Image 1 (spheres, rainbow, N blue to C red):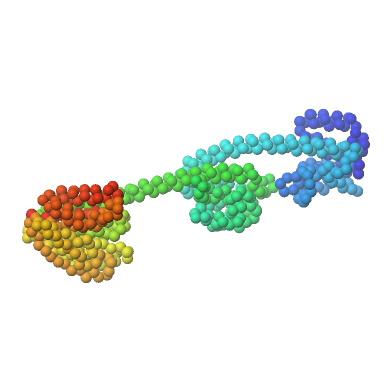
Image 2: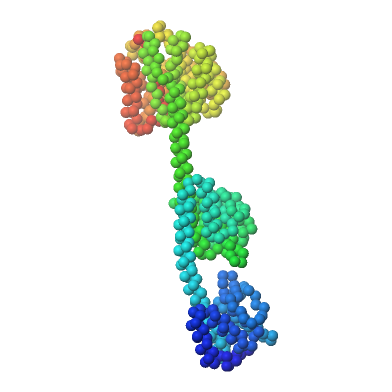
Length: 526
Protein backbone atom coordinates (compact mmCIF):
# COMPACT_ATOMS: atom_id res chain seq x y z
CA UNK A 1 0.00 0.00 0.00
CA UNK A 2 1.60 3.34 -1.02
CA UNK A 3 1.78 6.30 1.41
CA UNK A 4 -0.23 9.42 0.87
CA UNK A 5 1.54 12.04 -1.19
CA UNK A 6 0.73 14.88 1.20
CA UNK A 7 2.26 13.10 4.18
CA UNK A 8 5.40 12.42 2.18
CA UNK A 9 6.10 15.77 0.55
CA UNK A 10 4.63 18.52 2.72
CA UNK A 11 7.39 21.05 3.62
CA UNK A 12 5.72 21.70 6.95
CA UNK A 13 6.06 18.03 7.85
CA UNK A 14 9.80 17.94 7.07
CA UNK A 15 10.28 21.23 8.95
CA UNK A 16 8.55 19.70 11.96
CA UNK A 17 10.82 16.65 11.84
CA UNK A 18 13.97 18.77 11.71
CA UNK A 19 12.79 20.93 14.61
CA UNK A 20 11.98 17.76 16.59
CA UNK A 21 15.43 16.32 16.00
CA UNK A 22 17.10 19.60 17.01
CA UNK A 23 14.92 20.03 20.08
CA UNK A 24 15.22 16.51 21.46
CA UNK A 25 18.94 16.06 20.78
CA UNK A 26 18.18 12.38 20.28
CA UNK A 27 17.13 10.25 17.35
CA UNK A 28 14.63 8.10 19.24
CA UNK A 29 11.72 10.62 19.35
CA UNK A 30 12.26 11.28 15.65
CA UNK A 31 12.18 7.55 14.93
CA UNK A 32 8.96 7.20 16.91
CA UNK A 33 7.36 10.15 15.06
CA UNK A 34 8.45 8.90 11.63
CA UNK A 35 7.20 5.41 12.47
CA UNK A 36 3.81 6.90 13.32
CA UNK A 37 3.80 8.85 10.03
CA UNK A 38 4.72 5.69 8.15
CA UNK A 39 1.83 3.86 9.82
CA UNK A 40 -0.59 6.64 8.87
CA UNK A 41 0.81 6.95 5.36
CA UNK A 42 0.35 3.24 4.77
CA UNK A 43 -3.04 3.22 6.45
CA UNK A 44 -1.81 0.54 8.92
CA UNK A 45 -3.40 -0.10 12.28
CA UNK A 46 -0.01 -0.57 13.92
CA UNK A 47 3.71 -0.45 13.26
CA UNK A 48 6.77 -1.90 14.95
CA UNK A 49 10.46 -1.36 14.41
CA UNK A 50 12.86 -4.20 15.24
CA UNK A 51 16.66 -4.04 15.67
CA UNK A 52 19.08 -6.94 15.45
CA UNK A 53 20.93 -8.11 18.57
CA UNK A 54 23.10 -11.11 19.47
CA UNK A 55 20.32 -13.71 19.20
CA UNK A 56 17.94 -12.22 16.57
CA UNK A 57 15.67 -9.16 16.42
CA UNK A 58 14.10 -7.36 19.37
CA UNK A 59 11.23 -4.88 19.34
CA UNK A 60 12.54 -1.33 19.78
CA UNK A 61 9.62 1.07 18.96
CA UNK A 62 5.87 0.51 18.38
CA UNK A 63 2.88 2.69 17.60
CA UNK A 64 -0.79 2.11 16.95
CA UNK A 65 -2.26 -1.27 17.75
CA UNK A 66 -1.23 -4.72 16.71
CA UNK A 67 0.15 -7.95 18.05
CA UNK A 68 3.90 -7.56 17.56
CA UNK A 69 6.15 -10.13 19.31
CA UNK A 70 8.88 -8.81 21.61
CA UNK A 71 11.52 -10.64 19.57
CA UNK A 72 12.04 -13.19 16.84
CA UNK A 73 15.02 -15.12 15.54
CA UNK A 74 15.14 -13.54 12.11
CA UNK A 75 16.58 -16.63 10.47
CA UNK A 76 18.61 -15.61 7.43
CA UNK A 77 16.94 -12.22 7.17
CA UNK A 78 19.55 -9.66 5.97
CA UNK A 79 20.31 -6.30 7.58
CA UNK A 80 20.04 -4.92 11.10
CA UNK A 81 16.51 -3.43 10.79
CA UNK A 82 13.05 -4.87 10.40
CA UNK A 83 9.79 -2.92 9.96
CA UNK A 84 6.35 -4.45 10.44
CA UNK A 85 3.13 -2.67 9.36
CA UNK A 86 -0.25 -4.21 10.07
CA UNK A 87 -3.86 -3.44 9.05
CA UNK A 88 -7.06 -5.28 8.69
CA UNK A 89 -6.24 -6.02 5.06
CA UNK A 90 -2.45 -6.18 4.51
CA UNK A 91 0.84 -6.52 6.39
CA UNK A 92 4.02 -5.02 4.99
CA UNK A 93 7.55 -5.96 6.13
CA UNK A 94 10.90 -4.56 5.03
CA UNK A 95 13.90 -2.51 6.12
CA UNK A 96 13.29 -0.38 4.07
CA UNK A 97 11.10 -2.15 1.48
CA UNK A 98 12.65 -2.89 -1.85
CA UNK A 99 11.66 -0.77 -4.85
CA UNK A 100 11.21 2.51 -2.95
CA UNK A 101 9.37 5.07 -5.05
CA UNK A 102 9.18 8.84 -4.64
CA UNK A 103 5.84 8.32 -3.00
CA UNK A 104 7.52 6.26 -0.29
CA UNK A 105 9.79 9.07 0.93
CA UNK A 106 8.46 8.59 4.44
CA UNK A 107 10.10 5.17 4.62
CA UNK A 108 13.36 6.58 3.32
CA UNK A 109 13.26 9.22 6.06
CA UNK A 110 12.45 6.56 8.63
CA UNK A 111 15.35 4.40 7.49
CA UNK A 112 17.73 7.35 7.67
CA UNK A 113 16.50 8.26 11.15
CA UNK A 114 16.94 4.69 12.30
CA UNK A 115 20.47 4.63 10.96
CA UNK A 116 21.23 7.81 12.89
CA UNK A 117 19.62 6.28 15.95
CA UNK A 118 21.78 3.17 15.64
CA UNK A 119 24.90 5.29 15.29
CA UNK A 120 23.90 7.25 18.37
CA UNK A 121 23.36 4.02 20.30
CA UNK A 122 26.70 2.68 19.17
CA UNK A 123 28.45 5.84 20.37
CA UNK A 124 26.63 5.62 23.69
CA UNK A 125 27.65 1.98 23.98
CA UNK A 126 31.27 2.84 23.30
CA UNK A 127 31.19 5.63 25.87
CA UNK A 128 29.60 3.21 28.30
CA UNK A 129 32.27 0.60 27.60
CA UNK A 130 35.03 3.16 28.16
CA UNK A 131 33.45 4.19 31.46
CA UNK A 132 32.76 0.57 32.35
CA UNK A 133 36.37 -0.28 31.59
CA UNK A 134 37.49 2.33 34.10
CA UNK A 135 35.04 1.00 36.69
CA UNK A 136 36.16 -2.54 35.88
CA UNK A 137 39.82 -1.68 36.41
CA UNK A 138 38.99 0.06 39.69
CA UNK A 139 37.01 -2.98 40.78
CA UNK A 140 39.81 -5.33 39.76
CA UNK A 141 42.29 -3.18 41.66
CA UNK A 142 40.13 -3.25 44.78
CA UNK A 143 39.59 -6.99 44.42
CA UNK A 144 43.32 -7.51 43.90
CA UNK A 145 44.09 -5.65 47.12
CA UNK A 146 41.46 -7.65 48.98
CA UNK A 147 42.69 -11.08 47.92
CA UNK A 148 46.37 -10.14 48.12
CA UNK A 149 45.94 -9.34 51.81
CA UNK A 150 44.78 -12.92 52.54
CA UNK A 151 47.54 -15.51 53.05
CA UNK A 152 45.41 -18.35 54.37
CA UNK A 153 44.90 -20.68 51.39
CA UNK A 154 41.43 -21.88 52.40
CA UNK A 155 40.11 -18.37 53.11
CA UNK A 156 41.76 -17.05 49.94
CA UNK A 157 40.18 -19.73 47.74
CA UNK A 158 36.72 -18.88 49.03
CA UNK A 159 37.38 -15.14 48.61
CA UNK A 160 38.56 -15.62 45.02
CA UNK A 161 35.47 -17.58 44.03
CA UNK A 162 33.02 -15.12 45.63
CA UNK A 163 34.80 -12.11 44.09
CA UNK A 164 34.78 -13.71 40.64
CA UNK A 165 31.06 -14.46 40.84
CA UNK A 166 30.36 -10.90 41.96
CA UNK A 167 32.52 -9.29 39.25
CA UNK A 168 30.77 -11.18 36.46
CA UNK A 169 27.23 -11.09 37.92
CA UNK A 170 27.25 -14.87 37.63
CA UNK A 171 24.71 -17.06 39.33
CA UNK A 172 27.13 -19.94 39.81
CA UNK A 173 30.84 -20.50 40.12
CA UNK A 174 33.47 -23.14 40.82
CA UNK A 175 37.16 -23.03 41.66
CA UNK A 176 39.44 -25.92 40.66
CA UNK A 177 43.02 -26.77 41.56
CA UNK A 178 45.28 -28.23 38.87
CA UNK A 179 47.74 -31.10 39.06
CA UNK A 180 49.28 -33.11 36.21
CA UNK A 181 46.68 -32.00 33.68
CA UNK A 182 43.71 -32.77 35.95
CA UNK A 183 41.40 -30.18 37.52
CA UNK A 184 40.01 -31.08 40.94
CA UNK A 185 37.10 -29.21 42.48
CA UNK A 186 38.10 -27.01 45.40
CA UNK A 187 34.84 -25.22 46.17
CA UNK A 188 31.57 -24.14 44.50
CA UNK A 189 29.01 -21.37 44.73
CA UNK A 190 25.34 -21.50 43.71
CA UNK A 191 25.20 -25.17 42.73
CA UNK A 192 27.08 -28.37 42.07
CA UNK A 193 29.95 -28.83 39.64
CA UNK A 194 31.86 -31.83 38.35
CA UNK A 195 34.43 -32.95 40.88
CA UNK A 196 37.24 -33.73 38.43
CA UNK A 197 38.03 -33.51 34.74
CA UNK A 198 40.99 -33.42 32.39
CA UNK A 199 42.23 -30.36 30.51
CA UNK A 200 42.35 -32.56 27.39
CA UNK A 201 38.56 -32.88 27.19
CA UNK A 202 37.17 -31.10 24.13
CA UNK A 203 34.64 -28.96 25.99
CA UNK A 204 37.28 -27.93 28.53
CA UNK A 205 39.77 -27.08 25.79
CA UNK A 206 37.17 -24.87 24.09
CA UNK A 207 36.45 -23.03 27.32
CA UNK A 208 40.16 -22.53 28.01
CA UNK A 209 40.58 -21.20 24.48
CA UNK A 210 38.21 -18.36 25.37
CA UNK A 211 34.94 -19.70 24.00
CA UNK A 212 31.75 -19.47 25.98
CA UNK A 213 29.91 -22.70 26.55
CA UNK A 214 26.36 -23.90 26.42
CA UNK A 215 24.82 -26.66 28.55
CA UNK A 216 27.55 -29.10 29.61
CA UNK A 217 28.11 -31.60 32.40
CA UNK A 218 30.88 -29.50 33.96
CA UNK A 219 28.22 -27.50 35.77
CA UNK A 220 24.92 -29.41 35.56
CA UNK A 221 21.91 -27.15 35.05
CA UNK A 222 23.88 -24.12 33.86
CA UNK A 223 22.91 -22.70 30.45
CA UNK A 224 26.07 -20.67 29.81
CA UNK A 225 29.66 -21.25 30.92
CA UNK A 226 32.83 -19.19 30.97
CA UNK A 227 36.26 -20.32 32.18
CA UNK A 228 39.69 -18.81 32.74
CA UNK A 229 42.86 -20.70 33.72
CA UNK A 230 44.85 -19.71 36.79
CA UNK A 231 48.50 -19.87 35.70
CA UNK A 232 51.85 -19.06 37.31
CA UNK A 233 54.83 -18.84 34.94
CA UNK A 234 52.84 -20.70 32.25
CA UNK A 235 52.09 -23.56 34.65
CA UNK A 236 48.46 -24.27 35.38
CA UNK A 237 47.55 -23.97 39.05
CA UNK A 238 43.79 -23.98 38.74
CA UNK A 239 40.65 -22.92 36.90
CA UNK A 240 37.80 -20.47 37.47
CA UNK A 241 34.49 -21.64 36.02
CA UNK A 242 31.48 -19.29 35.90
CA UNK A 243 27.91 -20.22 35.03
CA UNK A 244 24.89 -18.15 33.86
CA UNK A 245 25.24 -14.37 33.77
CA UNK A 246 22.41 -12.47 35.46
CA UNK A 247 20.34 -10.25 33.13
CA UNK A 248 17.00 -8.44 33.08
CA UNK A 249 15.47 -11.44 31.31
CA UNK A 250 16.89 -14.10 33.66
CA UNK A 251 20.24 -15.51 32.62
CA UNK A 252 22.24 -14.85 29.50
CA UNK A 253 25.56 -15.62 27.85
CA UNK A 254 28.86 -14.07 28.88
CA UNK A 255 30.26 -11.43 26.53
CA UNK A 256 33.70 -10.44 25.37
CA UNK A 257 34.08 -7.97 28.23
CA UNK A 258 33.30 -10.76 30.70
CA UNK A 259 36.00 -12.97 29.22
CA UNK A 260 38.50 -10.13 29.53
CA UNK A 261 37.46 -9.37 33.11
CA UNK A 262 37.68 -13.01 34.20
CA UNK A 263 41.09 -13.41 32.54
CA UNK A 264 42.45 -10.32 34.33
CA UNK A 265 41.01 -11.47 37.61
CA UNK A 266 42.46 -14.96 37.12
CA UNK A 267 45.90 -13.36 36.76
CA UNK A 268 45.45 -11.55 40.07
CA UNK A 269 44.13 -14.71 41.68
CA UNK A 270 47.19 -16.63 40.45
CA UNK A 271 49.55 -14.15 42.11
CA UNK A 272 47.56 -14.19 45.35
CA UNK A 273 47.41 -18.00 45.41
CA UNK A 274 51.13 -18.29 44.71
CA UNK A 275 51.90 -15.85 47.53
CA UNK A 276 49.66 -17.78 49.91
CA UNK A 277 51.24 -21.07 48.81
CA UNK A 278 54.76 -19.73 49.34
CA UNK A 279 53.69 -18.33 52.71
CA UNK A 280 52.38 -21.74 53.73
CA UNK A 281 55.62 -23.36 52.55
CA UNK A 282 57.62 -20.84 54.56
CA UNK A 283 55.55 -21.55 57.68
CA UNK A 284 55.88 -25.28 57.13
CA UNK A 285 59.63 -24.96 56.64
CA UNK A 286 59.91 -22.87 59.80
CA UNK A 287 57.87 -25.45 61.72
CA UNK A 288 60.02 -28.31 60.43
CA UNK A 289 63.18 -26.41 61.30
CA UNK A 290 61.92 -25.87 64.86
CA UNK A 291 60.97 -29.53 65.17
CA UNK A 292 64.30 -30.64 63.68
CA UNK A 293 66.22 -28.41 66.06
CA UNK A 294 64.21 -29.85 68.96
CA UNK A 295 64.93 -33.39 67.73
CA UNK A 296 68.63 -32.56 67.38
CA UNK A 297 68.68 -31.21 70.93
CA UNK A 298 66.96 -34.36 72.23
CA UNK A 299 69.45 -36.51 70.33
CA UNK A 300 72.41 -34.57 71.71
CA UNK A 301 71.09 -35.28 75.19
CA UNK A 302 71.12 -39.02 74.45
CA UNK A 303 74.90 -38.89 74.11
CA UNK A 304 77.07 -38.77 77.23
CA UNK A 305 77.25 -35.23 78.55
CA UNK A 306 80.79 -35.86 79.80
CA UNK A 307 83.45 -38.53 79.46
CA UNK A 308 83.65 -40.74 82.58
CA UNK A 309 86.99 -41.10 84.35
CA UNK A 310 88.57 -44.50 85.09
CA UNK A 311 91.96 -45.15 86.60
CA UNK A 312 94.00 -47.07 84.05
CA UNK A 313 92.11 -45.80 80.99
CA UNK A 314 92.23 -42.71 78.78
CA UNK A 315 88.98 -41.98 76.90
CA UNK A 316 87.84 -39.74 74.04
CA UNK A 317 84.64 -39.62 72.03
CA UNK A 318 83.41 -37.55 69.09
CA UNK A 319 80.35 -37.61 66.81
CA UNK A 320 79.20 -35.39 63.97
CA UNK A 321 75.93 -36.04 62.06
CA UNK A 322 75.78 -35.50 58.29
CA UNK A 323 72.53 -33.62 58.81
CA UNK A 324 71.19 -31.70 61.76
CA UNK A 325 70.10 -35.00 63.28
CA UNK A 326 71.69 -38.35 62.51
CA UNK A 327 71.68 -42.09 63.01
CA UNK A 328 74.98 -42.64 64.84
CA UNK A 329 74.99 -43.35 68.56
CA UNK A 330 77.61 -43.98 71.22
CA UNK A 331 77.48 -44.44 74.96
CA UNK A 332 79.98 -44.81 77.80
CA UNK A 333 78.55 -46.64 80.82
CA UNK A 334 79.75 -47.43 84.31
CA UNK A 335 79.21 -51.17 84.78
CA UNK A 336 80.00 -53.50 87.69
CA UNK A 337 82.94 -54.85 85.70
CA UNK A 338 84.27 -51.47 84.65
CA UNK A 339 83.60 -49.42 81.52
CA UNK A 340 80.88 -50.25 78.97
CA UNK A 341 81.47 -48.76 75.52
CA UNK A 342 78.84 -48.90 72.77
CA UNK A 343 78.89 -47.54 69.21
CA UNK A 344 75.90 -48.03 66.88
CA UNK A 345 74.87 -46.94 63.41
CA UNK A 346 71.19 -46.87 62.36
CA UNK A 347 70.37 -47.44 58.69
CA UNK A 348 69.26 -44.25 56.96
CA UNK A 349 69.53 -40.67 58.08
CA UNK A 350 67.44 -37.83 59.45
CA UNK A 351 64.38 -38.09 61.66
CA UNK A 352 63.56 -41.81 61.07
CA UNK A 353 67.11 -42.79 62.04
CA UNK A 354 67.01 -40.48 65.06
CA UNK A 355 63.82 -42.17 66.27
CA UNK A 356 65.52 -45.57 66.12
CA UNK A 357 68.50 -44.16 68.01
CA UNK A 358 66.08 -43.05 70.73
CA UNK A 359 64.53 -46.54 70.79
CA UNK A 360 67.97 -48.15 71.10
CA UNK A 361 69.07 -45.78 73.85
CA UNK A 362 65.94 -46.44 75.92
CA UNK A 363 66.06 -50.21 75.50
CA UNK A 364 69.80 -50.38 76.24
CA UNK A 365 69.52 -48.38 79.46
CA UNK A 366 66.54 -50.42 80.63
CA UNK A 367 68.20 -53.77 79.96
CA UNK A 368 71.76 -53.04 81.04
CA UNK A 369 70.75 -52.88 84.72
CA UNK A 370 69.43 -56.45 84.57
CA UNK A 371 71.45 -58.14 81.85
CA UNK A 372 75.26 -58.19 81.49
CA UNK A 373 76.71 -56.70 78.32
CA UNK A 374 76.92 -59.82 76.15
CA UNK A 375 75.01 -62.18 73.82
CA UNK A 376 71.84 -62.27 75.96
CA UNK A 377 71.64 -58.47 76.04
CA UNK A 378 72.03 -58.24 72.26
CA UNK A 379 69.37 -60.92 71.72
CA UNK A 380 66.92 -58.88 73.77
CA UNK A 381 67.86 -55.66 72.00
CA UNK A 382 67.49 -57.43 68.65
CA UNK A 383 64.04 -58.74 69.57
CA UNK A 384 62.90 -55.27 70.64
CA UNK A 385 64.25 -53.55 67.49
CA UNK A 386 62.82 -56.31 65.26
CA UNK A 387 59.32 -55.77 66.67
CA UNK A 388 59.41 -51.97 66.76
CA UNK A 389 61.01 -51.06 63.41
CA UNK A 390 60.19 -51.34 59.72
CA UNK A 391 61.40 -54.47 57.88
CA UNK A 392 64.06 -52.51 55.97
CA UNK A 393 65.47 -50.80 59.07
CA UNK A 394 68.30 -52.17 61.19
CA UNK A 395 71.09 -51.13 63.55
CA UNK A 396 74.72 -52.19 63.50
CA UNK A 397 76.34 -52.18 66.93
CA UNK A 398 79.64 -53.00 68.60
CA UNK A 399 79.91 -53.11 72.39
CA UNK A 400 82.63 -53.93 74.86
CA UNK A 401 83.10 -54.19 78.62
CA UNK A 402 86.60 -53.19 79.70
CA UNK A 403 88.28 -53.85 83.02
CA UNK A 404 90.31 -50.64 83.55
CA UNK A 405 92.71 -52.27 85.99
CA UNK A 406 93.54 -55.52 84.26
CA UNK A 407 92.84 -54.49 80.66
CA UNK A 408 90.48 -57.43 79.98
CA UNK A 409 87.99 -56.72 77.18
CA UNK A 410 84.79 -58.69 76.52
CA UNK A 411 83.34 -57.54 73.18
CA UNK A 412 80.48 -58.40 70.84
CA UNK A 413 79.82 -57.12 67.31
CA UNK A 414 76.38 -57.09 65.64
CA UNK A 415 77.17 -56.41 61.98
CA UNK A 416 79.21 -53.28 62.71
CA UNK A 417 82.52 -52.15 61.29
CA UNK A 418 85.29 -54.12 63.01
CA UNK A 419 86.71 -52.22 65.95
CA UNK A 420 90.49 -51.83 65.78
CA UNK A 421 93.07 -52.60 68.43
CA UNK A 422 96.39 -50.90 67.68
CA UNK A 423 99.13 -52.30 69.88
CA UNK A 424 101.94 -50.09 71.07
CA UNK A 425 104.19 -52.22 68.85
CA UNK A 426 102.11 -51.23 65.77
CA UNK A 427 100.35 -54.59 65.46
CA UNK A 428 96.65 -54.27 64.54
CA UNK A 429 93.76 -56.60 65.42
CA UNK A 430 90.20 -56.32 64.06
CA UNK A 431 87.22 -57.17 66.24
CA UNK A 432 85.01 -58.76 63.57
CA UNK A 433 81.23 -59.17 63.64
CA UNK A 434 79.85 -62.28 65.33
CA UNK A 435 76.21 -61.79 64.40
CA UNK A 436 73.82 -59.85 62.13
CA UNK A 437 72.68 -56.24 62.68
CA UNK A 438 69.90 -55.69 65.20
CA UNK A 439 66.39 -55.84 63.81
CA UNK A 440 67.04 -57.91 60.66
CA UNK A 441 65.97 -61.28 62.07
CA UNK A 442 63.87 -62.44 64.97
CA UNK A 443 66.93 -64.22 66.43
CA UNK A 444 70.52 -63.10 65.94
CA UNK A 445 72.66 -65.90 67.40
CA UNK A 446 75.29 -63.54 68.82
CA UNK A 447 78.57 -64.60 70.39
CA UNK A 448 81.13 -62.64 72.39
CA UNK A 449 84.93 -62.79 72.40
CA UNK A 450 87.71 -61.38 74.54
CA UNK A 451 91.18 -59.87 74.41
CA UNK A 452 93.63 -58.11 76.69
CA UNK A 453 94.86 -54.53 76.38
CA UNK A 454 98.39 -53.80 77.47
CA UNK A 455 99.80 -50.45 78.42
CA UNK A 456 99.81 -48.08 75.42
CA UNK A 457 97.35 -50.17 73.35
CA UNK A 458 94.53 -48.18 71.72
CA UNK A 459 91.02 -49.54 71.07
CA UNK A 460 89.14 -47.65 68.32
CA UNK A 461 85.39 -47.88 67.71
CA UNK A 462 84.18 -46.00 64.62
CA UNK A 463 81.21 -45.71 62.27
CA UNK A 464 81.44 -46.22 58.51
CA UNK A 465 81.05 -42.46 57.98
CA UNK A 466 84.80 -42.28 58.71
CA UNK A 467 86.07 -44.99 56.35
CA UNK A 468 83.51 -44.34 53.60
CA UNK A 469 84.36 -40.65 53.20
CA UNK A 470 84.96 -40.15 49.46
CA UNK A 471 86.98 -37.70 47.41
CA UNK A 472 86.00 -36.10 44.11
CA UNK A 473 87.04 -39.25 42.23
CA UNK A 474 84.71 -41.32 44.41
CA UNK A 475 87.64 -43.03 46.16
CA UNK A 476 86.96 -44.02 49.78
CA UNK A 477 89.14 -42.99 52.71
CA UNK A 478 89.22 -46.62 53.80
CA UNK A 479 90.27 -48.57 56.85
CA UNK A 480 93.95 -48.55 55.82
CA UNK A 481 94.27 -44.77 56.10
CA UNK A 482 92.53 -44.88 59.49
CA UNK A 483 95.01 -47.48 60.74
CA UNK A 484 97.93 -45.40 59.46
CA UNK A 485 96.61 -42.39 61.36
CA UNK A 486 96.25 -44.40 64.56
CA UNK A 487 99.80 -45.71 64.22
CA UNK A 488 101.42 -42.39 63.28
CA UNK A 489 99.70 -40.54 66.13
CA UNK A 490 100.06 -43.26 68.77
CA UNK A 491 102.15 -40.99 71.01
CA UNK A 492 99.55 -38.20 70.89
CA UNK A 493 96.67 -37.76 73.31
CA UNK A 494 93.39 -39.36 72.28
CA UNK A 495 91.81 -35.92 71.78
CA UNK A 496 94.64 -35.05 69.40
CA UNK A 497 94.12 -38.34 67.55
CA UNK A 498 90.44 -37.48 67.14
CA UNK A 499 91.39 -34.07 65.71
CA UNK A 500 93.90 -35.72 63.37
CA UNK A 501 91.29 -38.15 62.03
CA UNK A 502 88.73 -35.37 61.63
CA UNK A 503 91.20 -33.17 59.77
CA UNK A 504 92.40 -36.01 57.53
CA UNK A 505 88.91 -37.04 56.43
CA UNK A 506 87.91 -33.39 55.79
CA UNK A 507 90.98 -32.82 53.61
CA UNK A 508 90.38 -36.10 51.81
CA UNK A 509 86.78 -35.06 50.95
CA UNK A 510 88.18 -32.00 49.10
CA UNK A 511 85.32 -29.77 50.10
CA UNK A 512 82.52 -32.24 49.33
CA UNK A 513 79.63 -32.23 51.82
CA UNK A 514 79.72 -34.87 54.53
CA UNK A 515 77.92 -37.91 53.18
CA UNK A 516 77.28 -39.89 56.36
CA UNK A 517 77.33 -39.55 60.14
CA UNK A 518 80.80 -39.85 61.67
CA UNK A 519 81.54 -41.22 65.15
CA UNK A 520 84.72 -42.16 67.02
CA UNK A 521 85.25 -43.66 70.48
CA UNK A 522 88.90 -44.18 71.51
CA UNK A 523 90.32 -45.68 74.69
CA UNK A 524 93.93 -46.38 75.70
CA UNK A 525 95.30 -48.56 78.50
CA UNK A 526 97.53 -46.42 80.70
